[in-house]
Length: 220
Image 1 (spheres, rainbow, N blue to C red):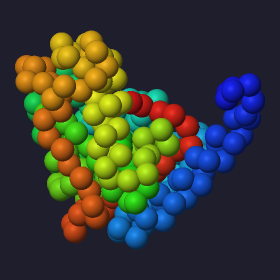
Image 2: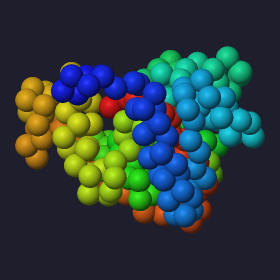
Image 3: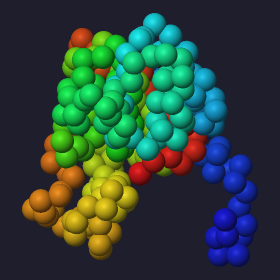
């Protein structure tokens, strides 16, 4: 990185991410979540697998982060039942898979943004992720790179409008204004993906939620 001719070392980026992550984990725990910080993706993968030992069936939201860690494939190799609407079983429709995701032993997803003050924000188009992560599955694991952590709830919501939604719409090939311009226009496009906003201010009463922050840029 070069700032006005002054070269900075990537180690300081990692250091800054670690300090922000420590603050975020502290506040997530204060808000009732089981929160963890992993220095790298390999550490996160091992940590997540340790959290899943008692579960037999798993649902996956449309998360690039969980797939970057290879979690669906790993669990399938271990003989676990996986409900993934990106790779539905031949005998199940897309809707069937999404419904099953909300009633399995564990649901895994990422977050569009996490505030350093301890809130988790997700915006969905369908709503299967928002529902599964709040009620229905006894265990939920939310995995997010530090690129998704912001200083406050307001900045978390702004990140979704300004960064996550345009990038995600573009990646999915959606015909929305933000997928062309890179800017949210609060559109009414038929393929709009920002339809349902869920903010976890505190851990839901009947759901055990673990949050794993990774000191790497992952997902959108």
